[in-house]
Length: 267
Image 1: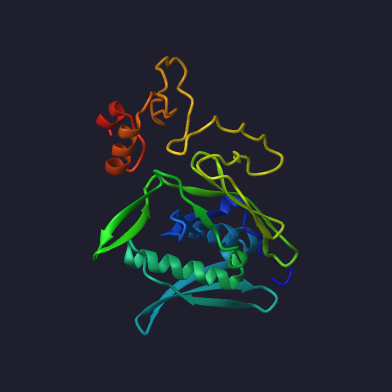
Image 2: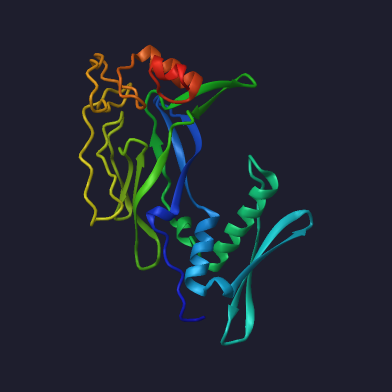
């Protein structure tokens, strides 16, 4: 087992979620992003490195807390090597989330995804239409809309297995966070970031998006559509038809995503 090495996570292995949203002193709204791995990533890497029949997991309650133990068979020593950690409850499914979290934490002990601890502080300035404010116990609480998604398209490491390159894009493929050579690079806001859809240098790069307004991201109409695009330049992401600012704002509030009036009726 001493010759086996846990592979570094690729961009496809890493998920990205909004951890918190806040208002800066200059009035802008921004989100702190969290990088994490799914439990299926741990299973795949354990299978890949040790073989499906050479590892096992068990769960047990210790003082009311759910622990997971990953055991890996060491053929040289003819014994099971154990790694254990505790999980925390999920916001959705309590028991399932806690078991999954304990498994992933035990995976960190094995060495799976430990490089995520070296991730830089990831803060993204949000555009209009990406965030909302709610009153909770008399104070303003900022949140992103459900359709606001971010993903990792590129990640690189140094010889210490530390993250030195990181590219994060929004759901339209615009680069919103760029970290190269161990330092953060400035990216344009308001949907003006460069498009980064390829996950490796060998893949073709997607052309940059058309000009956009700060209020909406422009997308080309579908083939065969002749509807005029409104002055604001916004189009419905479902049918490709024109969408006014009022329709867009109403749709974001009610449905959590951008829809024209016609598509709102079918939502």
